[in-house]
Length: 418
Image (tube, helix red, strand yellow):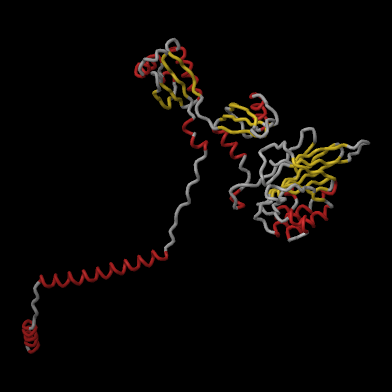
């Protein structure tokens, strides 16, 4: 009983001390607390955002490469025919009506690509393929030939230009030579048309030719002309070497990369080694392009690689090209040497060659050098194969050699810039 009394007493005391609070007041207090907490959280989020933005690195996609000419023309080279009424006052609507009455594309299984209105009541009908275009041309000519002028539209095709022609060849000769000598580029269903051939302004004995070719062949031409990997050498243009040998002489390119030292040569340097057989003599032509960006170490590695070509000791040597040593002219006049020139002098002593070109460019420099162990005579020529660069005068190198015959012969090797 005492325990029950105690519980009842505690209950009365607790009930007497109860605090009664209005519900509205509770909600008001809670709302203020929540708003204050949310405001604090929001400020903290904004502070974190500002801090992140300070250290953030903005990443942007590189600009897309401009489309190639062939890509632009991809959807503009559909074969098509033009159907024009002989009555120039006829409406386009009447022309379309006559065509639909005479030509049923579904029955003839012709896939049309587009239909365009043109002036004087005519229309252009584009087809998905050349075969469909020829079929449509045949049917339309047969059914509408009395009242309409019908002809095929060649479409828009890319154009290329061939430079350095030494003769005014006929259109058929140019086309034949081009297709025959480039089977990897011009193969399959090829469209090639010579538009015009003309002499260059500076030399009426050198000609250029403009050709119109199909898009697929154009893409191959552009790829064939882009064998230099500019991305690998961090360059956008420049470089490239070529050696042309008359067909009457036997010649071949030397695979220099079977010699390990050439694998260490800077990719910025272009080098081509050609072996030419003239009568019973062997002539080795080393054509170089060395850009201005190369270091002395690059020069040393290159010349060490050339030293490794033991075959060069079996014939006449010609080391020609753009060495890009602007100080070489000062060295000849004042004997002022540097590391680049010292490296060249080592090459000269190793192969017993002499530098024969003393014709300065418009800037007074000697960039193009001709080294040989044969006796040479170098002079400027006005008969350049291409337009002359003011930094690289066109040169002709006359060389006397002594083959295994009783009479001395003289061969002329042109070092014109390509």
